Length: 90
Image (cartoon, rainbow, N blue to C red; front, side, top):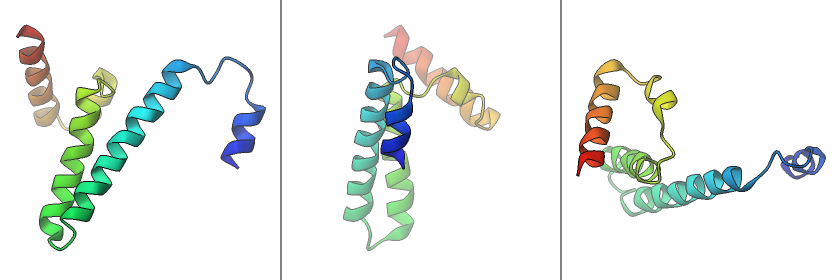
């Protein structure tokens, strides 16, 4: 279904930016799966570690932007903005 959906899309919708975002998300997903697989014997460790890995890779790849931060709880989004400002300042 996805293939046929991509086939009927007008030209120009799927450009390099979309492909780049998909590749970055797939990379983060593979890393998350690898962390989860390594720690699968300890689910209380595996779940937060895998989730943190996914978010960290997307963060460093700059796929998480201000629009997504607005969806987070205020205490978490303000902390992430502080980290972003500190990273930009160095």
